[in-house]
Length: 264
Image 1 (spheres, one colour):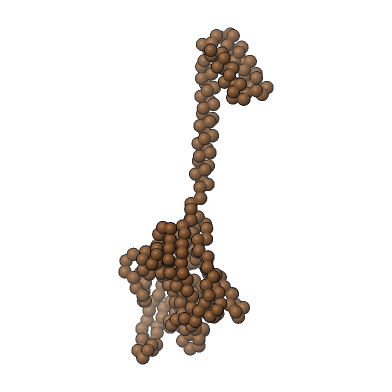
Image 2: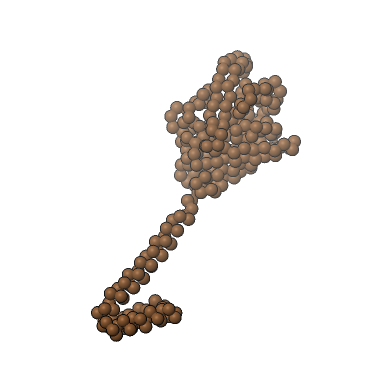
């Protein structure tokens, strides 16, 4: 019985090459000299070798499959509005989250904008947690009158744009002044009811002339510049901004919108 099983095993394993036929002849010769009892250990070793090779192949294929598994990208529904009135009041960019497949950590997102104005000027920017963080820095001494009331003071604004508000933002939320890091992009999640907002520097944009920044300190960047580029003020109502939001884990663009600029 062992003789038959040995021959069948070798044939079924496809060992029909010249070298393998020699192996078969060796086994037959070995069997004639030493008897069947001596053959059994050899067959056992060969069986173990075959099983080891099969297991190694299966494990290798499984590990390779795990290494190439791509994480599914989340889904995101969002309304985006961009306005440029030529002055800080009524100029803004707002992202309002309408739907998500699951809460999305903004640390895993990248916002990419690009545009060309009707005047022929082009611009755009990329917003990401580790990219130029914080990407907003202004230190304003201000004095202005709004609806009959005069406001004066000094205010430092340093954060990672865009700021988060509403659902998905933990801790105390402020609408102006110095913002806590809980509202910085990368530190909150996107959920239905989350808003991301930015506006131009209120002390230097459009103060003397509409759509023009007055001279400020070198290196100052406000929220609109951080998201739309340093020359965003060239945008006019009717111009279109292309907005892409990329999921960094999957590398996929999960939101793509063309947003028309309005006057307010």
